[in-house]
Image (cartoon, rainbow, N blue to C red; front, side, top):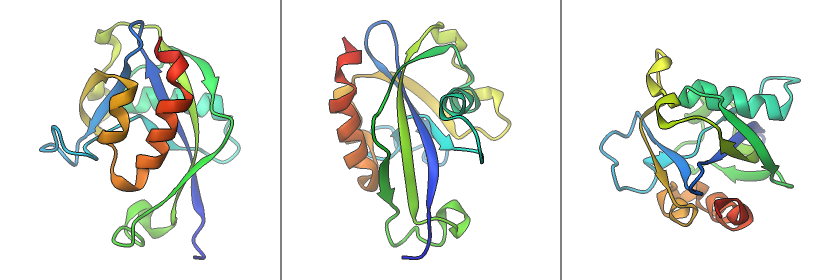
Length: 159
């Protein structure tokens, strides 16, 4: 495959109870319990952008708050490929998937600080707190292995 991977950062945002923020994709409003309807905040990295700055920027853009501190960085880049039916469509057809640097963050705000309505074209239309163990079952199949890995590798931060 000649298409490159899109560089991306992802946020596993833990609240004081050890739960993580998951958000429902606005383009899947009927996916209340369906796999793939819910995901973690994530997004592209601008050329030359510091990864730690990028994850806080993406968190603020996607869920309306940057009231968080980074508590861990996953040691590896985790990569997924798009399924054949999305190749040439997702990411404007420029990428074969994403290579992601994931961060664990501690939420420093209150639930009222999470504001999906601040973006004029929000990616998410709902959010909730979930257990880290629930995460893999929420993922679309092509992202499930990454979410399984995060559930194991960031488990210590859920305590």
